[in-house]
Structures are given as structure tokens and as C-alpha cells.
Image 1 (tube, rainbow, N blue to C red):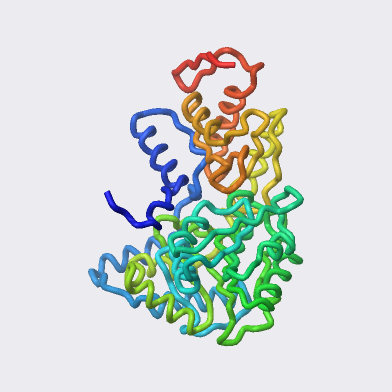
Image 2 (image 1 turned 135 degrees about the horizontal axis):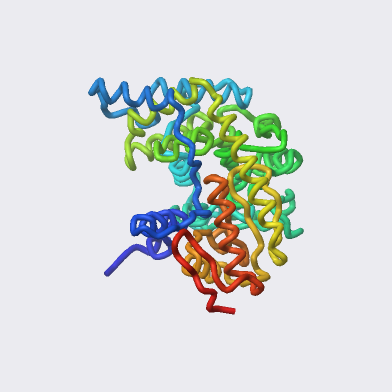
Length: 405
């Protein structure tokens, strides 16, 4: 079969594949614990559900504008003013079918083949393939000091004549690290001085812990004119637990938004009207669900970190936000894919291999499920990896025999 060169470079989304695999095993009745998931288990806000149901009941579900409905754009404008202190116009915002599409369309709008996009490592699994889909070159930037917290030097030393854009995701998936004020300031100022596009993937910016406050990139931008190359991406998936609604957005200069909307119009047309209606209600409605989710996630994080202290060989950096913990399991196996498959096969716990995020020897563990799942999942992992564990483990009515070293 003849397929394109770009298609040959693209792999499947590992995180989505793991979600599918876990669902299949559960459907078979297997007692799978999913510590690899990327979606909160809490329900979408009532305001969103009621709004979606009302529009469905009206029967008036039609095409929407390529850049979002007027109501959706007004909600994005309100959100940007409330959480970023920046008043923008409808021409500066675009709704998409998820923050992922907003990032993808932004990259398609600014990247030429062979140009480069830089992002700190560890990184979200989709960034490299998104760049490749544009015929561009992904350039991971692991912090030189071995931590999850980049410095501006980690970015600047990778900038060359082909560099076109930088992507920053803070708090970060998979590490949960919230980058420092100094770094965000420096990267905003550097990208402005060098004429680079800067995409701020802020999808987790309200899910931060220990009294931290979101860092606002606009505070450090000197050029907010129609020539600004700053692109801020957000959405309802994480903070409102509305992953299946697939509504995100981008805020950028009017010319760029127009180009992005043109691209989107030929890809998917406008985001689904019912889902935009729900997103508007979530953004404009009572915000207690976001606060409740943040408190729940912080508590879950504390439970997970405490449980991981029971491992002699696991190194843990306490997450500042999100619902992920990126743990160094290289003491047990430096091949993270092999280790992840081993845990799924032996004790039916889903984790995500660190290599997919650009760092081998790590596993991403999610704590957005129940406390019960966290406790039992870590107990199973410890039993599978600790050579001093008992020979038997019961999972429900099933007895597992430890027949490996």
C-alpha cells in the first residue's frame, strides 16, 4: 500500500490506545485499575448538562461558524478577562473541537516543512507527531539539570535558523510540574525578541495545588498588538471534567485567528453546537465544580505520593498540579514500555511508559480516579515489583501467584 511520507512518521496515540485497552479488559470482566488515564472521574457541571439537554430538546442543532458561535466566543472573552486580566475581541478568539485541535491548527498556520518547534521534556505525547503532521521537526528540550523544571537556557541553546515556535505546557503533562515565574517571563520575552511563535498550552492552569496561583503569560508580554506571536490555548476538558465534550479554544492576534479558522473550516467546520452550548454554560455558570475537583485532586495526589514512599527504588517529584505523577522506575526496569506491559499483564494495572513523554525509565501514574483505585493499584504494583512480596495476592476472588523474580 502506498501512503504518504508524513503518515509513515505518525504513530498512534499511546494514551488513547491504553484507554481503549483498559475498556476492553473491563468489558471482559477483568479487574483492571487504570492509573494511566487523563480524565477526571467527576461529572460535568450541571449547568453544562442542562444547557446541552435544552438545545437537544429544541431540535435546533445546526452548523456553527468555523471559529465558534457568538455565545462561545463571548464566553472565551469573559474567561480571558477573568483569569488573564486581558480584554480581547471576538476577532482574537477561536473555538475548536478540543484544545488539541486548537494547538494543531495553530501549528499548521505557522509551520513550514523542515521548520522546528521546541518544547520542554517531558512533554505531552502528541506534540512531536503534531509537528510531524505539518512536515516540521519536533525538538524536545530536556532540562540540563535533570529536573522537570526547565530554565531559559534549555530553550535558547536549541534555537537555530529553522526554529519557528515554542510550546510551553505548565502545569505539565506528564510531570505535574508548574514552571517558575522566572522561566515563563524569560520565555515570553525571549520569543518576542527572537520573533518566535509561543504557544501556551494552559489546559491545566486552574488545577494547581498547595496554594499556588496561575502564572499569567500576558503579564510579561510587551507586544500585544496585532503582530503579537503569543497564542494561548485552553479548554473545558480538564478543569470542568468535560473531556468528552471536546471544546477548546485559542486566543491570538486577529490575522492569525482568521487563518486558523480558515484551516479549521476545511478540517471539521465549526465545533458541534450542542457541545459549545454546554461549554458556554460551564464557563458562565457556578465555578464550584472546578474548586471541588482541584481539592479532590490535591488530596488524591497526597495519597499517591504517600503510597509511593513505600517503594525503595522509586524516585518521586511531588506534582504541583494536573492529575499526573511522573515517577522514575528505572531501578526496576529501564525499559518503561516493557515495565508498563509487565504491570498490565501481571497485575492488571494500566500505566503509561515514560518513553512516550520523552524520558525512558519513567511511568506516568494518574491520580484522577478514586482513592480506592490509587491504593489498590499501588499495592498491586508493589507486589509485582518487590522481590520480598508474599507469593500470593488476591484481586477480588482471584488468586495471583508470583511466579517471577
